[in-house]
Image 1 (cartoon, rainbow, N blue to C red):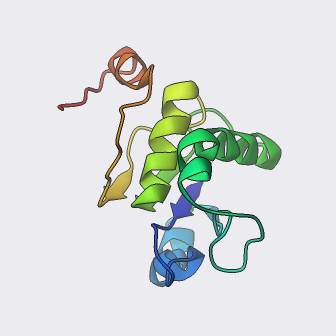
Image 2: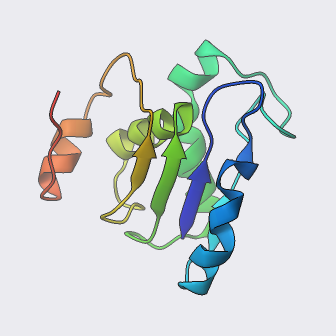
Length: 127
C-alpha cells in the first residue's frame, strides 16, 4: 500500500502526489490518497486542533478499515501529512513498512513512543 498524504495550505489536497500514482501502481502498490479534514474535497474542519490531536488515529483507523496487512503501508507525505504519519507510527507501527518518503516535516513535539517504536524496528531518529 502506498499511502499519499498532503501538507498544509489552501492549495493542498490528495492530488499533490497524483503524478506518482501510475508509477506506484505499476510497481505493485495499491495507492491510497485522501484529503485530510478541511482540505480539498474533504468535509470537516482542519486546523491546529485536528492536526495535533486526531491525525494519527485517523490514519490508523483508515488502515484498519482497508484491511492493510501489518508491515504493508509505505507513506509518501508532505508537511502535516508527514506529521500525521509520525503520530500514527508512534501509536502503532504495525501497519507500516520499512521505507517512507517524508518532505517538509515540521512537528512541534516528537510524539510519545516514536523513538521507542523506531528503535524496536531497527531504526532511529536524530533530533
